[in-house]
Image (cartoon, rainbow, N blue to C red; front, side, top):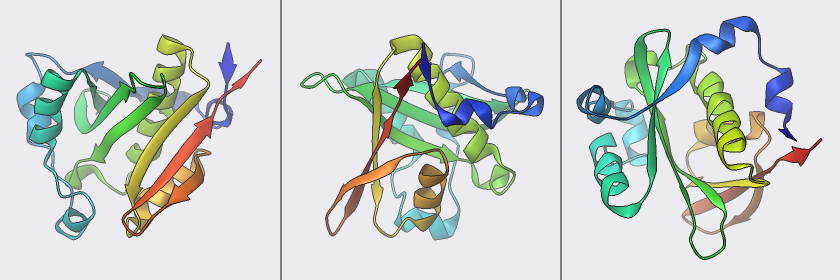
Amino acid sequence: MIKNDCDSQLSPQDWKVHLRPVDQSNWYDCAGLKVTEEQRNVFPVPAVYWLAESAYCGFTPLSLYHSEQLVGLAIYAVDPEDGMYWIMAYLIDHQHQRKGYGLLGMKALIRYIREKHGCDTIVLGHRVENKQAAKLYDSVGFVEVSRDEHEVRRELQLERE
């Protein structure tokens, strides 16, 4: 089993935040998720784009719920060249931000990828100016491994027990 610091920070309340597959019952609601107006310059692609790309590029879309309320969307994929697991997109709807769902959802996503795929590393990228994302990713253990003028690349190393 792979272990990560995220699990030690979970309380029983956190388990109310969970992931579900995106399917015929929720894809339309997922397509309508939006970031805040201020975040559009650092997350300019709408959720519907990620859902369409998932359908045709082999990405895995997951909806994020708090109890029965849809609050966000996560998209991940495996790079066929090197086998690395990438979080391609992660967003919390503008109406549900600043409630802790971003952190709880990211913990659930890490746990899901780890348990389903048994990988050692999860990779993601975000725009340099996206300070809110940087803070979230730092808080769950993602470490910056490279950057250019547009993007920061981060990795989370998952330890084996």
